[in-house]
Image 1 (spheres, rainbow, N blue to C red):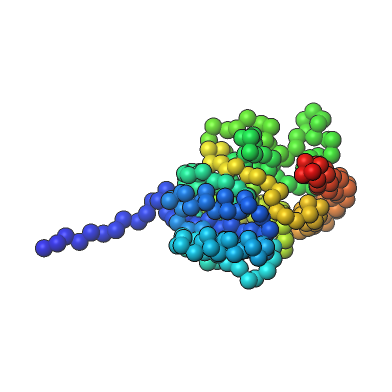
Image 2 (spheres, rainbow, N blue to C red):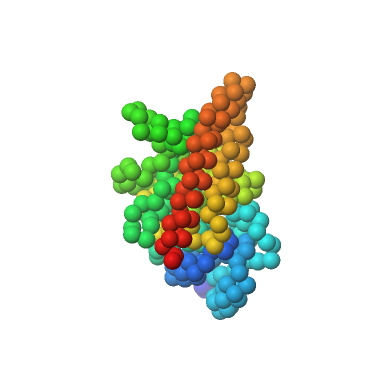
Length: 306
């Protein structure tokens, strides 16, 4: 007589991970990013959402992916925006964990699972985000941030953050924590949640075409009573600004996202009035900082490209 064996449920560190990667005119970094994901056998599947790449890039990708059964390549829908692209990929994912990874972010073996382990014991709907490093290994801005409000924006996008007792929302100048810590905002370039949390939150807000959707979903998770944590031992090397699209166009979308974000979260007549005033005060500085950075990077890349 053969004894029956009951399959034990998978524990949290064993549950499958789906990576969703949304690409738009990414360039050579995309293939490197895909290679890095496929190096990690702990990743169950990779879903690449092609929001628009060149025909030659698509042909190379199709050839590259033809013999790789852990990858699904979605195309033909046009440029539907980053948040909507993430939601599209997530709707077809089969993993327990959903890892949203930028197409120019190079993940190391084991970092996806470390991000999942960082969620152990967190209250749903939860989100974890990892460390972003540049090509020299330095921490990039955006991986860990405070809450974005009209007041914090007015401080962060003006010289006010240099005054005593006032701080910017950005935390990259602070020492890295020894382990996972609560954080109001983590980066959508390397962000994880699970299926139940993502569905509870309704996914990313598709009204943000590009940028700020990560700030929005982190805020909604916290408002719903969930935890948002920064996991410093999970990291990626993030090239940044690899999309072959004019920088000014990208940064304009970011500015539009910030203005929409503040308009969306006004509450009550007093709060609404105060938000309007602070948003009005902060907007010129946000525009100068965001569009000025785009102009600087465009000029620098043009000079370096000669």
